[in-house]
Image (cartoon, rainbow, N blue to C red; front, side):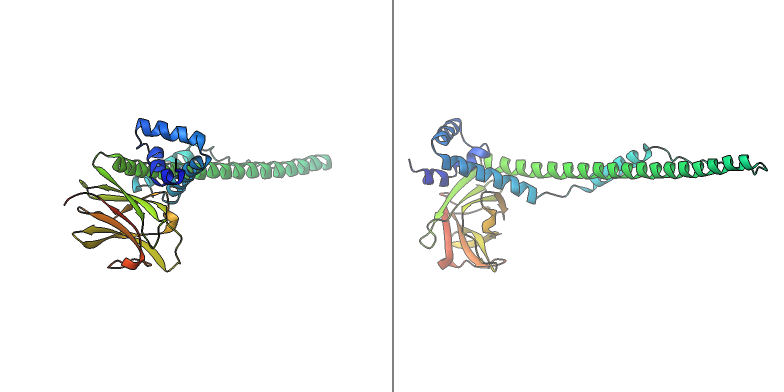
Length: 270
C-alpha cells in the first residue's frame, strides 16, 4: 500500500465532499485506522475548506439589510420609555429649622435626579448595545447562509453524474505537482482542486488551460495558497486535456510550455 499515492489520488476530497462510493468510504475509513498520515491529510483538507468558507463569505442581498433595520427599529421601540425628570419645587420658609429641612430635601432631590438620569442613559446605552449585537448576528447569519449555499452548489456540480474528474499529474519540470479538475461538459462549468503546488514569488501565478484541438484556452489564474479548496474557473465546452503553467501575475494570453507543472487528459473525443 503506497499511502502517498493513495492520498494524491483524490480520495480525500471525494470522501469529505460526499462523492465517494460506499466501498470507497469503507476502504478509506479502514486505512484511516492504519495510517495516521491519512487522517492528518483529511483534517488538513477539512481545515482548508472551513478557511475557504470564512474567507469567501458572500455579502447578503439588499433585502437582508432592510430586514435588519426593521428588526433594530422594533428593538428600539420596545425599549423602556424615557423617564421624565421629577422636579420638586421648594417654597421659602421663615423658620430656620424649616429652611434646613428644605435645603436637605433639595440636595436629596438633586442627588436622586442625578441617579435617575444616570440609570436612564445607562439603560439607553444597554438597549443600543443589544440592538447593535442583534444587527451583527443577523448579518453574520445571512453571510454564513450564503457561503453555505455557495459551497453546496459547488458540491452539487462536482457530484453530478455529468461531471468528469480529470486527474492532473506532474510533469518532468514539476513531478510532484498534482491537481484535480471537475468538468461538467453539459453545463461547461470547470472546478479545480489543487493538491500539491509549491508557493510562487509574488509576481507569478499558476494558470489553468484547456487544450482544444491542439490550441490552449485560458481558464483563469490561481495561487498556491488555494490548495485543497474548490476553485471555480472559467467555463469551457470542449477540452481534450487540461494543463497548468506558471505565468506572470494576472495571467498570460498563451502558455509558457517550458513551465508546465501539471497535465491531465479528459479522454473525451470532441
